Amino acid sequence: GNSVTQMEGPVTLSEEAFLTINCTYTATGYPSLFWYVQYPGEGLQLLLKATKADDKGSNKGFEATYRKETTSFHLEKGSVQVSDSAVYFCALRSSGSARQLTFGSGTQLTVLP
Amino acid sequence: ETGVTQTPRHLVMGMTNKKSLKCEQHLGHNAMYWYKQSAKKPLELMFVYSLEERVENNSVPSRFSPECPNSSHLFLHLHTLQPEDSALYLCASSQDAVLGKSDTQYFGPGTRLTVL
Image (cartoon, rainbow over all chains, first blue to last red; front, top):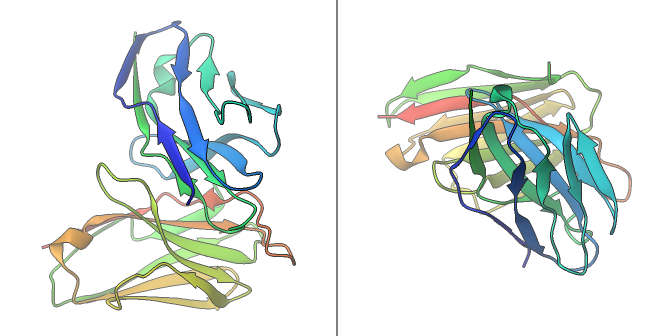
């Protein structure tokens, strides 16, 4: 079956530090990959996505590249801000289960001023 | 503004109560979803509706009963819940194309449910 594995948190960084949150997946076929962000007290918001190998999703300074050879979709940001503090979820949608998203367990990020 | 609203935002209920959660999407989508988010666990898909018909039900207990009267509204009726049902319940919507290939899902803010 499909699965998503994220690096365990919590992750605590100082403002302007470099961020990497690792995500690897197992899926049949050619999945679409997503990063969602959940700010305190809110629902999930789509941060970025990639639908095929070597695609790079980007938004708000965050980037992730779909690496089929390593089955990874790591999230990166060059300089984090306090306002980036949130929980980040990696997710996939496989071609065989068109409506179902499989989520990772989430990574809590705290950015200190 | 996500375009998906949920009410109430917080709900406390006893095990013998009956309550309903409401979700409304303003995005013109034709598919809607209920997810459960428990502490320390990945999000769990509960129900999927496409064009107002239930298309997936991931082995959810019968004490949870969904209803989708039209493409903009989705309800989750709750009765005789257990304390372990306490969680954040998230609604989402997407544009579900003819061949069953859904576009990006957009989430509401969730209802925080506490069962006493």
